[in-house]
Amino acid sequence: MKASDVMTQPVIAVCHDASLREAIQLMLKNRISGLPVVDHDGRPIGMLTEGDLLRRSETGTERSRPRWIAFLAGQGKLAEEYVHSHSRRVRDLMSPKMISVTPETPLEVAVSTMEKHRIKHVPVVENDRLAGMITRANLMQALMYFSPGFSGPSPSDTGIRQRVLDELQGTSWGDKGYITVIVKDGVVHLHGIVTDARERDALRVAAENVPGVKAVMNRVEWCDMASGTVVPFAEERLEVPPS
Image (cartoon, rainbow, N blue to C red; front, side):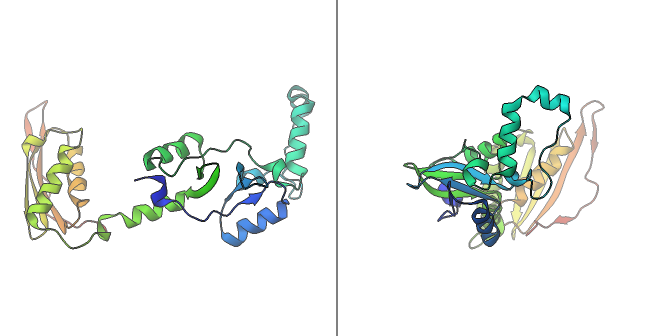
């Protein structure tokens, strides 16, 4: 998936010369926590987020330092903080360094960018223009849409079995050669032996996430390599995949 597959468009933005009041009204009206900031030509030049509005003189939350720390910080730093807590213009409060991606950026890279910079939204920019916006809410919506429950017609038992085998083959844990997969009427039956008890849950989850699976019967046993003891499954029950 690419950034363009999940991004919101058109983008709600604010001009750098706009007042703080205008920006806040936009955020409240549209129920968003951040606004891309653009210049008069529409080029993105920064971001204004809820975090930029925490330290404000109006609410009595401007930063206060002991005198000795203020002395060490220097007059320039104190002046910068004063502007940030007292100015009523977007350009004085915005973060001028805007982290962005392109429409063709792989979604995994976009998510990694958000994690790395600890941001809740990332603008999508193309040809120096805003093309869209990706937020955590967009990612949740994509997760919901692409979950197995949103798949089309139920596949055949043979198709389900092959999908389960393909999923297991693509994992980096466990020895798949000791696992048998049988599918009947959409129910996946897992048999075999694992050397780590945690692999049983991983096998179940792998099967549950395959579209068309109605339930999973996990009969995989655990072999304690230290003693050679085989520990059978605790109970025989159908695990129905979450919707």
